[in-house]
Length: 295
Image 1 (cartoon, rainbow, N blue to C red):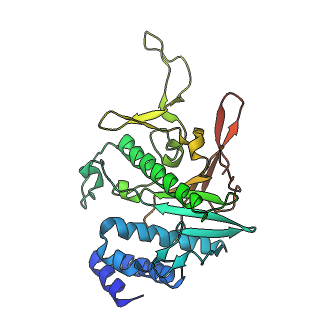
Image 2 (cartoon, rainbow, N blue to C red):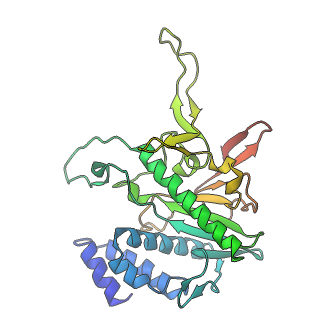
C-alpha cells in the first residue's frame, strides 16, 4: 500500500483500528492486479466520496471474483485508462463483462444519510422510492454505456454483460438490500413489482392473502414517470443481468451479491457461476413472467 493511500485512510477513518488496514489491503491488491485505472490513487485521495466508494466497490468485486478463481481480461487496461467495462471475466472461452457503479445519494433526505449518535434512538422512514430512482437511473446510464461498447466492437455478441450496482451510499447503514416489496432493489429496478398489499372488503374486512401489487413506474419529483419494467423492454437486451449489493466492506470476508437475470438478454448469463448469495430468474409463462429465486 502506498504511503499516500495509507495516510489518507488514517485521516478518513480516525480512531478506527480496522477500516484503514482493510481498505488499504483491498486497494493495494487491486492496484497491483493490472486492472485498476492508472489514476486510482489520485481519485481515491482527491475524488471525493463518490470516487472513493466507487473504487472500493471495484476492489471488493476484484477480491470476490479472484477468490472464485476467475481469470481477468488484462488487454482492456491501457496507460491512458480502461478500455471498456471495469472487468472482463473469462468463462468457457467467452467474456462476462461487468460495469460497476455506486449511485450517488441525490434526492435522499439528509437525515437518512446521517449516522446515529452514540446512545441515540431514532426512528426514520426509509425513502424507498427515492432510493429506487437512483437504481433505475444508474441502470439506464450503464445500459447506454454498454451499448456504446457494443457499437465499438469491444463487447461481442456472444459476451455477457452485467451492471453491478452497490447502493451503499443511499443510506447511513444498510442491513440488507430489500426495497418496499421485500425483494432486493435489483429486482425492483428491472421488474414491475411493487409494495405488498392486503385486499379488504368495503366494510374493512380482510378478503385475501397479502400479495405484491404491480408497479410499472415510479415518479420523479418533477412528476415524470420512470419505468421499473426494464427487463421487459427489448432495449435492455444488451444487459444480461443486474447485480446488486449494499455492503461497504468485506471485513468478514463475505460479499453478499444479488443477481437478477434478464429474460430478454441477447447473451444469457450462465446461472450459478458468480458466487451470488441470491439469484433471480423470470420464467416465460406465455402471457406473463414468473419471477422466482433460484438461491
